[in-house]
Amino acid sequence: MTRIVHVNGDELAEDQAKVSVFDRGFLMADGVYEVTSVLGGKLVDFPGHLARLGRSLGALKIANPHTDEEWLAIHRRMVESNGIDEGLVYLQVTRGNPGDRDFAWVEGVAPTVVLFTQSKPGLADSPQARDGIRVIMLPDLRWRRRDIKTVQLLAPSLAKMEAKAQGADDAWLIEEGVITEGTSNNAWIVKDGRIVTRGLSTDILHGITRAAVMRLAAEAQMTVEERGFTPEEARAADEAFVTSASAFVMPVVEIDGARLGDGRPGPVARRLREIYLEDARASAL
Image 1 (tube, rainbow, N blue to C red):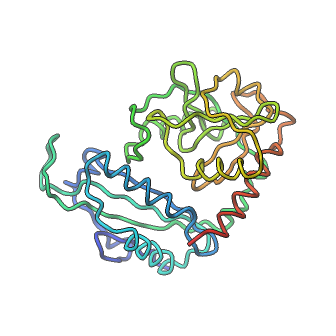
Image 2 (cartoon, rainbow, N blue to C red):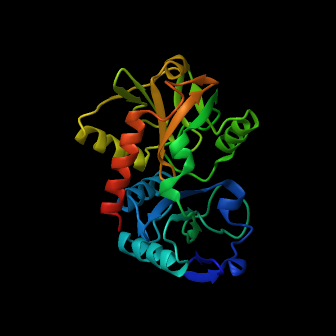
């Protein structure tokens, strides 16, 4: 089956889809993106993704090209056209094609809109979720507006590849002696029954899955502390996990070579993943 992608209002076979070489997303990483998971053919946490998209576009002074209703219709067409039962919808909006390259942008240029899907059967039943992942610590080299979900992803990509080169699955990033987040996820630890994650600021991405897990943890009467935590705290934790739109709640079983607990996913991470998936399926659009 040929994948159908969306480019500026047109739905095309992927080998027919094109964006200008003068697009500022290509030349300047001048754009934002969102990734929405699909479970049972429905969109997970979609209102949250749209709200964050609006905030990111506003921060970069890029006009939002669609209403919420239009975005929902486009996403649903992408899911249907590509027969996605479990997978992802990737959305990217850039400042567009001004016709030439310049650091200063031209006002009034139409944004470029691209969407495509990725089919991922078994997304909710990931073997990694059963076994847990291993992370290492690396310096955080990213810019200081991580709350804007921009397409400038070279630093986290390099960190993820360094983690793989060292035999790990991912990296947690350190700045001024505390952990900010993972390369593509929010970081959490559990110690003595207390769940700890970094508080919201411009230093981290305001994760949509993070927000859902905060709500569900409160409903389950779990104690959550929003504060920075150190690499030493992380390595001494009883358990740990990450959250993201594509990984949901993913247990961490090893940090910098130090095994957490008995080296298997802990009960808090397992329970949060279970109730998150239940809630996500029930509320998906």
